[in-house]
Length: 308
Image (tube, rainbow, N blue to C red; front, side):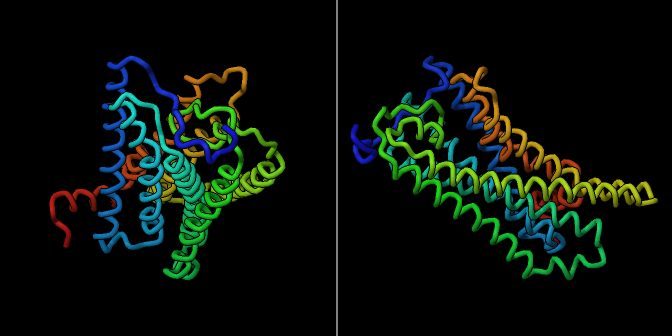
């Protein structure tokens, strides 16, 4: 293969070659996917329908759920189809679309989680200025910036990756199209371009992490100064779900990127990829609704048809 234009399809890594286990993987992934669709769909519908939830916190959550749905829909349906039909193939354009979409949804979600930490910081540390600093226009601008960040990130990385000549093989050691796996197929020295994009990514990720960290330092200091136990409990109940989602998102991503090469193997890489690409979108709705009685009540009203 002289260049990427001669590749019409890629071969993804199968979870197993045993037909019974392939079907088991299909049903397992189908259950996870339906749970993600149901959970995120309920959150989107509930927030959109309930006027009491039209606040900045729930506005950002309304933006987070579509990102979760998009993230899990990028990888899981194709993997389920391959398990069901006993194939490993994905078209060249399908692979490019997977790369673009995953690089769009994941950075956009990280950016939105950073914005949500600012929302919690203002709500707890500067409650008197909450309506001023987080008006409807400001919320829309911050959410749009998060989506735009994901789009630009995806555009730059996808264009850079698929402009490289691919000549070594068309087999990827992952269950979806992932840039590190595609770069291993390249016969071109593209280290300088990749290093430049990597520096930008590291800068954005570390900047978001530092912002989230110091926001929560200020939040916990403010919460500990609240005299009433009920007030502290209410403040923690609004922050802990977001902190749990951020921790899950960052920890799985860091482990995927920084796991020691000595323990790397195709099976471990598969498990790690499932952890960071499948688990967070599926469990985020559960995390956000677990300690949020207001959201639980609104979901129950939606299910039972008792919206006023």
